[in-house]
Image 1 (cartoon, rainbow, N blue to C red):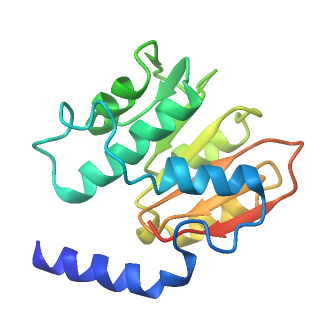
Image 2 (tube, one colour; image 1 turned 90 degrees about the vertical axis):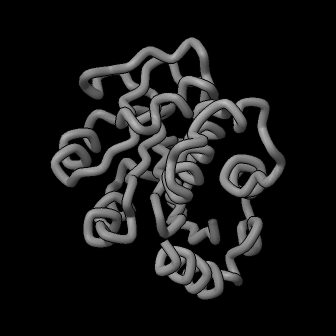
Length: 174
């Protein structure tokens, strides 16, 4: 546990120049970084979900809660440990067994990413969980022609697929 806290502190310090939207020129992307990724105010459901989870699962779960609250997905493909967070952010969400028609995808394996990249549509949000252990896979997502806006948060990566946007990659201190 103490090792994880020290690692977290070192990662945070190494990314200190990427705090709170610094360097993000697009107003849309800046708003996403400030008010979805790095929102520090407590949300209405924080006390009800994830109290028994470890600090990283709780931190990522709260991010996925804010993503769900922001995107309001109709269908999501999410690992079981994060489902309560996503459900708290969007009560109407249905769980998908496959990626067909899913608006929010939180994936953890290379096989899932390879299969899902071709199925992502303009309003899809793809999250690669455990990014620090899957750097080569993340590079493939960033270089994919369909992923236009990508956010590297060290612990996870977020890819948006809006074809009307110019391709952009951000490193965010999360």
